[in-house]
Image (cartoon, rainbow, N blue to C red; front, side, top):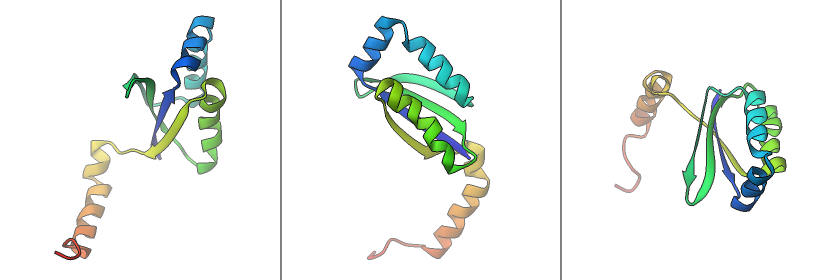
Length: 109
């Protein structure tokens, strides 16, 4: 299943890793192990963040995916299922339409 991993890197920890020269190697190794479909880094609410899209075949993989970020950079991690526009237009779109027929209005309205 396609997942989105959002990592938030604490400023002081990331700064220390950058200054020591360890940051780039950590990022390259962690991403090489994960083999993501796409990776983007950006600022999010004043912190360095990464948005990493990858395939997770089994929930038991979560530990191997999250722990490097926890242990290596004291990162905050969240993992969520993610869809492409094709996913949303296909099976997910059909499911939305089915649910809309079952629950056609907001309760109390």
